[in-house]
Image (cartoon, rainbow, N blue to C red):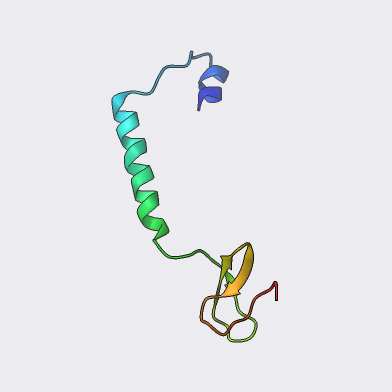
Length: 70
């Protein structure tokens, strides 16, 4: 955004209180959209369950025990 203002010949101005409030609301909404569960990185080739990252390795969250790292 700063680059856009400078490209148009406008000097940078600090954000207004309204812009700060809007950014905070947007960040809070993004936090709620993520959810509290683990991030799914794929599906298990054995049981088609969800894969999550555990210790840097895709691992079946459904509990079949499959792990890409062995």
